[in-house]
Figure 1 (tube, rainbow, N blue to C red):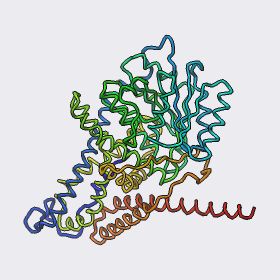
Figure 2 (figure 1 turned 30 degrees about the horizontal axis):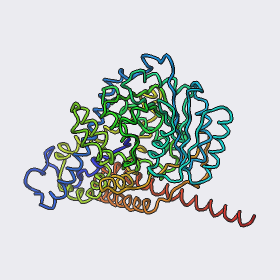
Figure 3 (figure 1 turned 90 degrees about the horizontal axis):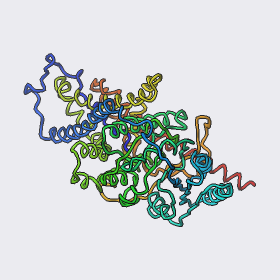
Figure 4 (figure 1 turned 90 degrees about the vertical axis):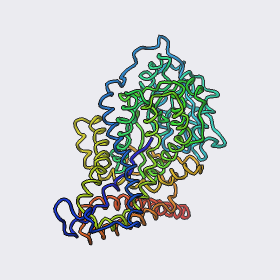
Amino acid sequence: MHMLPSVLGLLFAQPALGTRVMNGLFDDTFSGIYRLSPFDWALLIPYFGTLFILSIYGIHRYETIRRYRKYKKNLPKQAAQQFAQLPRVTVQLPIYNERFVVERLLEETSKLDYPRELLQIQVLDDSTDETRVFTERLCNQYRAAGLDIEYRHRTNRHGYKAGALQEGLQTATGEFIAIFDADFIPPGDFLQRTIHFFTDPAVGVVQTRWSHLNKEFSILTQVEAMLLDGHFVLEHGARCGSGLFFNFNGTAGVLRRETIEDAGGWQHETLTEDSDLSYRAQLRGWRFVYLPVLDCPSELPVETYGFQVQQARWAKGLTQVAIKLLPDIWKAKLPWRVKFEAFMHLTPNISYPLMLVVSMLMLPVMIVRFYMGLFQMVLIDLPLIIASFWSITAFYLYAQRELYPKTWWKSIAFMPMLMAAGIALTVSNSKGVIEALLGIKSSFARTPKYAITQQKAKVQQTAYRRKSGMLPYIELLIGSYFVYMINFAVDTLNFFAIPFLVLFVCGYYWAAFSTLYQEYRDKLQWQRARKLAEIN
């Protein structure tokens, strides 16, 4: 699943119109007064070539909106038929050091409205901390109360989540497998509203929409919710409605066990085992169903670095899936539109390293374009702006309009923050994508969750927070580079570029300073706790 390809660089290297004397609309750019040198071309060709590639993904966002509008009527609301006899279902709950959310998860899962004799719950625990003892005790309590619940703890994390799910199948008794990550709260009627779609023997997966428990917690969570809403409303809706491939999201869905086995089982070569299995299953002919009318609440990351870790894992994993499966997709006997959409779905994260290239070239290109004028801006820049900036705005606001028809306009105020958040992901996601392209393996980095809702205004613990290393300092450096570009824009009277350059500064500085602040606060809390322990 991808978030926001940062293509705002299309906007920024505008000509300094106030520094030269123009001769009407058609200035001296093409009159022979200024000739571009080979060095100028060496900067402009890769710069605009990169922007052209990025603009393709922007245009694709418009196409996604168009397809969604045309085909959303095809999205199901309920199953056409029902089972005369309900099938047996196994609910798998993969967890890893989830001390603060596992109790809530088990409580809500135990309330699922489904015949107890047909329901098995598997807790697949890879924890290495006190979560293990706590969770096993909870499972024993539910088992004593009559619930068919199995607790499985692995002494290694082989294959990470994919490995845990695959091992769980060894003792799973269900014909169908429902999966919920630790921070999700399955609605009580979840199985009753999803299981009947499998009366169609061709259906292999039913995916539901994610909603957000702590959307109102902060500006960050508001932005995260908008990004995910764009994916679940428009991308999933357009793909499912028009009969294209789309992915199971790893949680809040139900899979036919036969589909998992026919596709080759859960595999862990990639960090997005869900997308990997999804494409392998659809290549085998299984049909996926997306059910947007049923939402499954989940918790959003509340820390900037946790958000970056999550997005980098998804960016790297999706790129790994592209490398692994695109050759098979292109060779398969599929309509060209299915192949093209699969390519656009699996490759958009390449925009992040491309944006780093654009960022590094932006200042020298601004200097070159200082000698150019208005005509080339209208001829070149305006189409790129329409393809990128306007498409981002249209995409995410349209998704909000679909979800919240009466209050969607309030989301307009969050658009600058949404774009800044996309910029904040550039460095970390670029690292993930480059590692995927180079074949560099990495562990499955979990996103810490704390059972935070709208009412809870304070994070409970800091034990699970990861150290960010050099990332915030790199972001500070790049942000300062854009501060210098703003200074150059002021000196050359290029005022049109300044608001957009400010977005870059805000994005990089926001990511850097918020991460450093959170880590500094955690250090102080740890020092206070240590002093109290010494006193006692």
